[in-house]
Length: 130
Length: 150
Ligand code: HEM
Ligand code: HEM
Ligand code: HEM
Image (cartoon, rainbow over all chains, first blue to last red):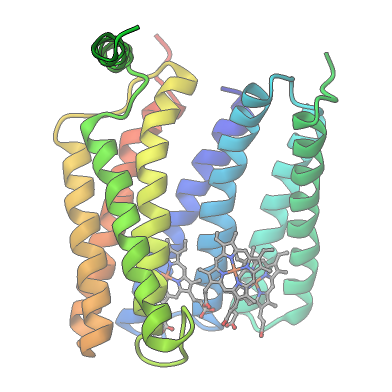
């Protein structure tokens, strides 16, 4: 399994633990963490835990199931960087009430989604590089 | 081929696949089956509220029947089945998957019951148990992803 894909899965697990933790802290005392904590928790879980887990597993398995190598390893690397630039900015934006940060982070996050989507389409349609 | 032979061949093929480790182990089978159960429970929100999620006190309950009950259990079952096969590294077994499963069931159940009954303490207990099960899962798959160099 490619190191980048193992990183995706590992980072997903860390986001999962982090997202659970801030939800628990909020349940214990809502004043401990400032900002829109449920929204941050929801997106840490869905974008950080579930989506990064899917990224790591799908980047490994879809080329194999499709029978062609991944269309572009470089695109997948940039996807890792973009996804992990975007989400921290979004979280910072929600916890700090800074809508501009959420928007900037959202663009990176969306960029990762597009990179992944195109890479997968080009892979599974059989336009792989070998 | 007579019907009996086909059944026999199927049985042999199945047993061979089980021995080679293609098919789910007992713990992962349990996770996947439970996920479907929680999905159906989450869907009850659809029947009661006319939408999966109503704005109200029960919203986090049905929401987490879906996210914790269905999504998390699917990841548990598929993740600990696939990751060792993708990497060739063993996942921590023994009592660990059963602790993970027990904590997750107790966690979802308490969390959901807590919201439905309006018992904040029970919600917190459920939240902690669910989080612990995720910690156990992480502990089990970490050496699959990052094995010690030998
Ligand atoms: C460790 C386990 C978890 C705990 C303790 C937990 C706890 C919570 C709490 C306390 C809330 C706020 C409820 C409210 O007052 O409205 C919440 C909301 C939410 N949770 Fe979780 N949760 C957990 C796991 C998950 C997972 C695994 C997912 C997704 C895969 C998830 C997705 C969400 C979403 C989408 C929201 C709604 C956010 C919003 O209202 O904008 N949670 N959770
Ligand atoms: C293009 C795809 C998707 C769109 C357009 C979409 C859109 C939405 C919208 C508008 C809501 C808010 C509904 C409401 O508040 O009543 C919602 C809720 C939700 N979605 Fe999706 N979604 C998409 C994909 C997904 C995926 C892939 C997942 C699972 C990983 C997911 C999980 C959830 C959950 C858990 C909620 C409820 C959380 C809450 O309301 O606080 N969605 N979605
Ligand atoms: C490019 C990535 C994303 C960005 C920039 C983004 C941004 C936002 C923003 C700004 C809100 C607040 C909306 C409001 O105040 O009414 C929101 C809410 C929400 N988002 Fe996202 N989101 C992204 C991806 C996702 C994904 C992939 C999911 C689900 C899998 C999701 C699920 C939700 C849910 C459930 C809510 C709460 C909706 C509600 O309370 O009605 N988001 N998101």
